[in-house]
Image (cartoon, rainbow, N blue to C red; front, side, top):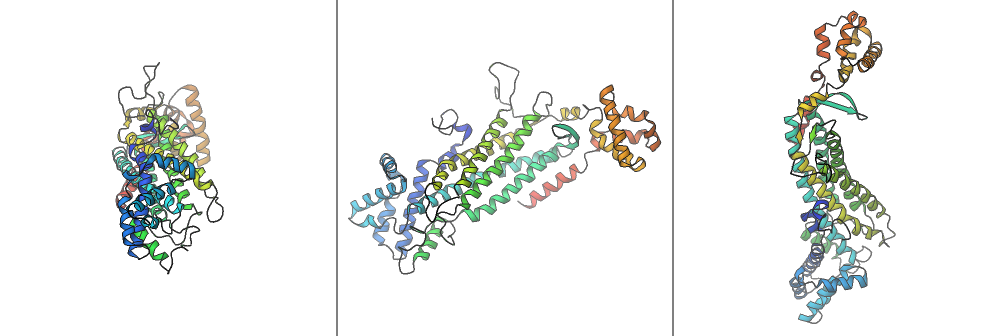
Length: 455
């Protein structure tokens, strides 16, 4: 085991079978072969190479024909796997008819093949990400609708602040994931671009003005956009998608952090989905640890750290670089598998989240009315002045804590409050947390309407 993604024990926690398959040697090599087969095909169509050569190259370009042991040896010797693949194509096709295999890889360079394969792998990864995001937003809409009026405490600096609703909390999360879906749609057009330019990107080896024709036809065959110019050492496309992975997993981690805090024994407002022994302790039988949230947090932090490496990889020298490019080979598979796993764990967490609305209501009463002090202050402000009302309620809140009595009791007995003219019924209304959730419900409805319009 060289990483948790390779571990038989951990690999399905820190990665997923679908994402790992995309970044496997088999899939990467399959995309190398797809590039070579597609290049030969379009070049035969344009009369750049003989049709017989193209047909023979196409016939070989299946991953089952690759000797991976030999490819490993060649990669260790050469430093790159592409030439090892090309050598096998040339050797096998030449065995059919001497010289036919020499038309393989015509006008291309190693980085053309490698970058295009990486783009195809990222395309497949983004398809998985899009599916996961759709699942997350679908489940969040259910939570928002179900709990849009469920009152709970909003927290600031880990302290009780004012009342809000749980639906409002989830709607903020939903709105964020909807923005990520927009980002993903925008990124695709910039990312899904062919790399085919030859040694220095100028397509100098394809004569008679057919270089750009070949490039456009190859892009179309691979389902990618043709580049406006070579991008061998302009790595903004890769860095941008890495930044996106950091953003989207950062949102997963924010949610997981809130779940961890809300699952604390002293809070108890939500619980992760229950499975027998899930998150249990080897020595404390009573424990139910927020294990999914723990993994989401760890994976998301790792993705953020790895994204920084992609920004380092942007600093490449001249037209073909000496080293930074290889950073992408190291971190992209990890980032993509970690991101997909974090998203799926977030989906499962949201779908099975246990919401304890009775505990949320109970927690609103912990401060004995302090949580609605803002409402009381603003209720008194028109008669007493906002600052005077603030200081008055501040002193009463302090007494409420010191004397362990409800704020409402102290309000009834205070001379200044009586002078304000507020009735007992008005004071009781101000002290009911359910009456001070502001526009929580309306804002939830607005988010839900907006996401539905965007479907």
